[in-house]
Amino acid sequence: MADDLTNPNHPGMPQSQPSAQPQSKEMHLQIKKDKMVSVFSNVAAITGTHEELFLDFAVNSQNPEQPNTVVMDVSTRVIMSYYAAKRLALQLSHAVQKHEQMFGPLEIDPGKRINPQR
Image (cartoon, rainbow, N blue to C red; front, side, top):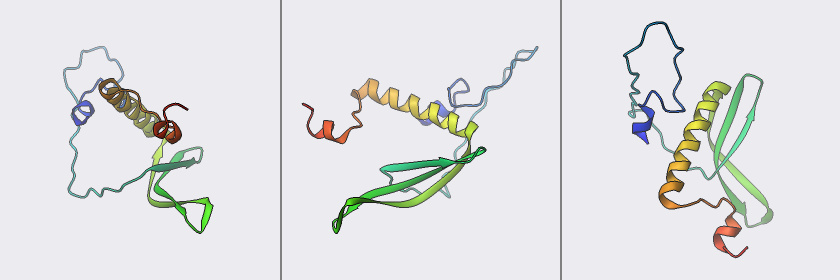
């Protein structure tokens, strides 16, 4: 996947406007991981304003004392513009398509994953 991010023709990369002169420069993405923090998330909630989106990444779990209540323990919030969100959506879509081509379709309904006859 990291190789895809260096491809200037990748759907998630910003595209340059055509010009009168051909451009021979490629854009490369350098990812610095020295300050990276990894978190696990099995759910995300999305809210926003007219200018930004707020993505809250969390782990959801059930409280045994309240079986009808799902607790969403938010660990990370990412705030981005709608332009960046669209690029992210394209990159995620591309990554999922590649995964499904290699390993088969992903069933997002947990009930159908556990009991495929449903």
